[in-house]
Image (tube, rainbow, N blue to C red):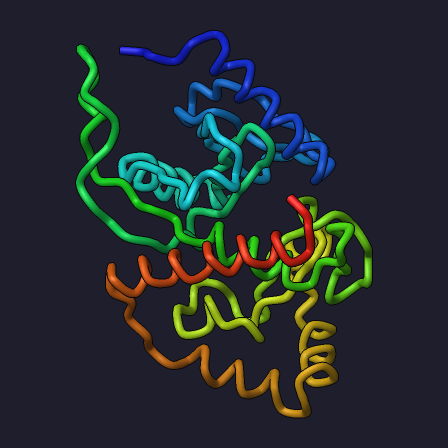
Length: 253
């Protein structure tokens, strides 16, 4: 049974338009063969899929975002079959957050929205993605009093809301995922189109923090680190407080 409204579909299309405009790609909605919100194309060639989730709050009001395990499993099967990535897009009232499903990390638990007649998916395993506050912290840390920051790898200047939290060592490595040296402000172009500009990222890390910093992070990323639910919740609390402190100190929203 469908619970999606006309307003939900409009928000979904807006999110897809904004997402695809950034990356200069095209999309096709309601992909029947894939059972997903949109297929992504570049020069008429399939390059990926996108699943859109609406969040009816401003990004600063939300501690984390969620996605159902059912959708993650479906997306994993889809990208394995078609050999292209799948992205989850969260559409806030004032911001868009997106991530490839392979990079999702968080806490698994049984929950969901209040049960509705006709729905078998309202109570299910969901994953809380805990990167929002950390990403905001990294971008605000480097922002001026006007709320602008500079890309770590190409020096592009933009408002912090239009920039991203770039990882030198991939976020799939828990040991460096929330490392404040490993993470620096990057523009969309460097972080996604150029896969983080790793060579330039390494050089700039060594220049900023000292020779050998990049190599140390590479070694640390190879270490195994498991995080408990308490660890994740502690980080949410810490970085939420750090974000609020930075906003107050710099007088920006």
